[in-house]
Length: 205
Image (tube, rainbow, N blue to C red):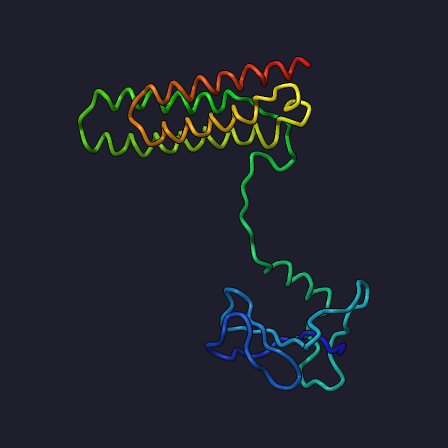
């Protein structure tokens, strides 16, 4: 089970992930290289670190210059590994948090609600509603980040209303997202202002 990874001639249209090969191994096709395949033995680079395959193989008719070592195989497997897209406030975490982010987005929600009240143009109102909903979601995101990443158990012990306050704030933002009444936007701003007060107090501690 220590044969090398070898290159093979184009095999035409095949399954992009894996296709049957001869008894010497499995043919795997790299993404974006549909006309080229790599034939690998069943172990597919299982050797421990430092145990590299030698170029060429005693029982193979593939020229040594067309083979790759296990080290090169591992490099290829990392190069073509699936890419995963993730999102987060910060991957460090950076430690930079501020309720002002939520407040600014909530202010946009209320301002749009006020503009919608004075404009009957259906195209304007459709665009305004879309933007208002986006701003409301961003405000909810920033509030949620404060709750999950910034506030710690000692904060919740000192401010036992904090859990309910955050919950009420998120619900108020959801209501403002679905409404054209500026009063709903103001209610969300009032909740965010209370969160900001607690936030500033924790900074002084």
